[in-house]
Length: 89
Image (tube, rainbow, N blue to C red):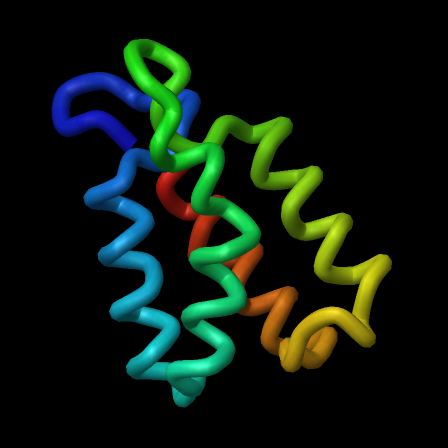
């Protein structure tokens, strides 16, 4: 969320704040790394498309839910991740 106006993207700085918050909720280093890997491409885009858009967030969360064998995040952890990231949209 922008300081003066709402943003439609989660910025890199906001994403790092979200990861810190998840660590305080008991997310492991491995879980945090997996989350970073899912959203890495979205965060490092250039210009006005930098950050995680609502659509990119939905796709990332859907991928995590649809591919439970490819990561170590439980459904509860995915729900918490979604809640924390949506706060910044």
